Image (cartoon, rainbow, N blue to C red):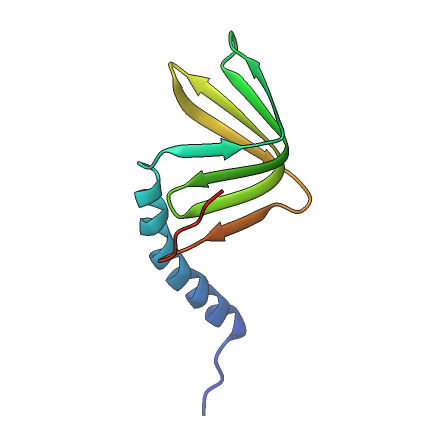
Length: 100
């Protein structure tokens, strides 16, 4: 019997996960973004918002919990999100409703 290369098994598993997760994340892209935090500082001229404290980010089925999130907007649309924390918790629910 031929042994399975462990590296190929890991690669195959990652490929299967990518095929399942990528379309789900693309569907979230059109959803509204909700961010709740302990504090917020806005630099309106630069289009930057600093969310600090217990930060909870929700978009579609994706929920992220972190210490801080920085968003940068261009023409009213968020084009960059930077997430910091230790740890950063990521949750993706396929069929359950999540509230933040």
